[in-house]
Image (cartoon, rainbow, N blue to C red):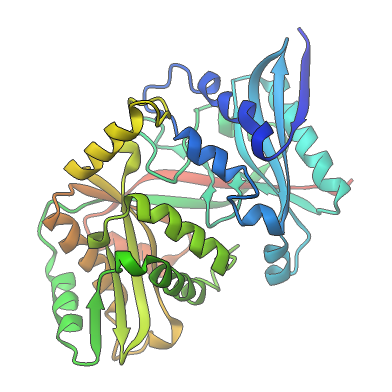
Length: 377
C-alpha cells in the first residue's frame, strides 16, 4: 500500500489536518471532538499570534489517499531567546497505530527542523507550553478537559520507537469542590480577606481585556523560572480575552490587589468539553444553541488554567496568597454548583506546588509526557 506524507499550508488549507482526528479517535469512548472552528483558528496566522512571530509547518500522512496521521514542526524564537537554545518542536501528533506512518511523520518533521538549524526536537507541544502540551501516558479512560490534549494508548510507543526519551512529565490533578475547605485553607482564606491592604475581586467582564493582560503580566512574573516557560505576549493575552468573553464565568476568576497593585490572580474556566460531547465539533446548525444552553445551565466541572503570585509578594506577610487562591476558587466554584475542577498542568518536579496540592483533597489523575530527541547527525 502506498504511504506518503505531504505538507499542508496553515490557514484555509489546513482542513485535512483537522479532519484526520475523526479517523485516529474512531472507537475511543473517552474522546470528545474539539470544536472545529476553534481548531481552524489555532492553525490560522490571522487568528493565532504565535504563528505570526514563529515558523511552523503541518504534515499529513496518507495511505492510499486516506489520511491516517498528522504532526506539526515549529520553531519558537521566544523560547530560544529566553533559554539560549536552538530548539525545535513537534506538536499535534495524532496517528493510527501504525509504526510506518509514525516514522514517516517524524522523519518529515525532523527534516524540516534540521534544515532550519534546530539541535533537538521536543514535544508534543502545540504550539507552546502556554497551549496544549504533552503526550497522555496515564488517564486514557477519562475525557479530555477543555484546552488539554487527549491521546490513544499507542501514542507513547510510536514516539519512543522513533528515538525519543522522556524529558519531563506534567501532572493534572482532580480536585473535588463539593466538600468543605479543610481548616488550613479556611484560615488562609479568612486571613487574606481580613487584610486591610488587600482587595479581592473577580475579573470584570466589561474590562476582560484589561484584566487578562494584568493576569498575563502576573503569570509571566510568577512562572518565569519554570522549566521551558515562555512569556504570554500582549497580543496572545488579547486573543485569550477574546476567547474567554464567549464562555468565561467571572465568578471563577479572582484578582488580588495589594495597595491597589495587582499581585496575584487565578482564572478557572467552565469545562466546555462537558457541554460539547455530542455535537461532533460542529457549532452549526444546532451545536451553538446546545452549547450556550448547557453553559447557562452550568457544567459540573471546570479547569484552573492560570494561577500565580508575583515574586515580590512572596513574603512572610503575604505567605498565604497562593493557598488562598485555591481556596477562593473552591468557595466560588462550590457556590455555583461545580462538583470538581482540574488543576493543571503542574511540572512533576515543582515540589512546592505539588506538596501544597497533596495537602488538599486533590489527586493526580492524568500524566502527560514531554519527549526530546537530539537532531545531531
